[in-house]
Image 1 (cartoon, rainbow, N blue to C red):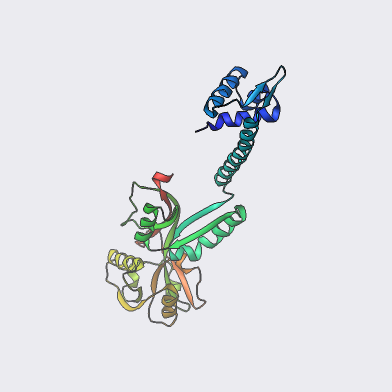
Image 2: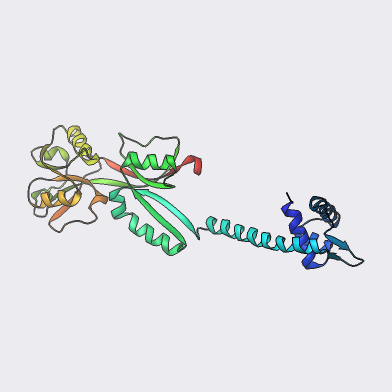
Amino acid sequence: MLNVRRLLLLTEATERGSLTAAADAMGMTTSAASQQMSLLEREAGQPLIERLPRGIRTTPAGAALAERGRVIRRELRAAEADLEAFADLNQGTLRLGSFPTASASLLPLALTRFSHRHPGVQIVVRAGVLGHLREMLHTGEVEQALLWDYEWNRVDDDALTLTHLLDDPTVLVVPADSPLRTLPALRLGDLADQEWIIRADNHPVADVLRRSCRRAGFEPRIAYASHDYQEAQAMVAAGLGIALAPRLALTSRRSDVRLLPFGSDVPAPTRRILLARATSRT
């Protein structure tokens, strides 16, 4: 097989009319260029250039080979440009994993800004629960993913590199006219006699409610199990009970409910929002 660098040397020499000029263009000495040209002629099995008192002239075989070299040089330069474009995020595909509350709150603005800065990059978003998102990271189905965790279920995975983006506090969702709004300091222990709206299907926020109430010394009385946060807000507004939820899950808040923060000394957990990527692809 012909050596590509020697072939490019022949192309440069053909265009510039001398080995010396070609050597300068390719960052080698004239002596080295002469040796490389001799090796190329040996590979080709025939003369490729004629050495003249001033410069060189290609043989018919050399001219044909130099033309091939121009095509190869053009493709190599295009390949380098492609790599630079990927390095500068000018093209390619970004495959991102996310979970519903992040997709509805954090992600839209981030994707809009990214698209404005890197319009040539296609963005593909895959949604999933925590376990599915981690699996997609491990298999390479996504390059990066937004994850979440609480203090009792930290994402501890040596195969993932994690960046802590922000803390998402737990808030209390109450009807707009609830007397709880007037409490000077909101404490979970004062809510033991309340009815609660919980998330169904073993949703993580249901675990948050039970853990928080138990730490405050009581077991929550469940009035309704909702299947999404909009339904939970509707049931709160209707007076069926109150609810706990991560603040980011309530960016689309109904006008007939209010969100009440807990004090820093109240055992209402905060979840971390994380950006994760596979360590092997870092």
